[in-house]
Length: 423
Image (tube, rainbow, N blue to C red; front, top):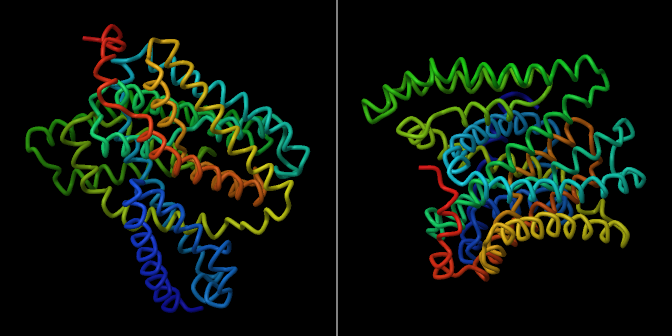
């Protein structure tokens, strides 16, 4: 296929992807589900699990193998920009303000699901769900990260849509979710750095990641980013030169962390988290998010859908294992966060509401499992199981929270967090 033909096909693919995702988005909005849920399912439906099964000839013409590289490249750009925006939303202030309760809920929401995932990984290594080259410790780390992650962007959007950003539930969930995501990405970075099997390369990757974090926070942040932020605060806007500089920094961060052997999304997330909240972070999100979320992120979901083959789960045993994965994810995260919230003084319904929010995996889970498949950690069968788990937990979060939530109760237990605030 010529370059001109590939470009023409790409435009058709984009039109179809956006039409399907937006149509599903209108349906799911009526169900009070965030758009990301519709996009996750849209990618699943356009892949071989439905379109490829129902209309294989059409699917082959719309997504021929020769066109997938272009979709992959665009999806990677989308991932980097998306994770940069996630970093911009990372609430360091909330982590500091509600540090004791946030750390308690976050630690429980990481440790218990990680332990559940570790046990599950040891069982699944014997069933051929991981590639032969993966050692048990790598499988344990991967499944631990997959089970303990929380979809911070989905959580933030549910909280914003319900108008509870300033309440105890909203604040604590955002703080704990931010900590969970950071811990999960650090764990996954350790997995990626160890996949080579070469100790020197693994140490080099870990060292490169630490060097990058140090350079970003103690070098780039107080010099380049601080100056751009100060100028943005003075002018109440973001000049094109400043936007270009920040995009160049994002590209450089993505390149460096990918070069060290971890992944570009880690670099983008850390850089976004280093941007101080204010005019700069607000204007960066305003400039980057619309195109990223409307155009590039749906391409990622479809690329994930093209790797998801539901027909690989072709036996009662595999469906049972998929159910076990979903149940383990829900039980580990939900019960742990509920118990931690209760232990720190939350009421029964309030603790359940926090657990429901923290159980969502969303796009962050899909990024992780796609990297696992791309780097040869997991088989396509396990990939499909984890995609179904990500969709299932994200679908549950909004309705479960709405069923549990009562604004009056949150107002009544405001003193629960008051003593933990930092002036």
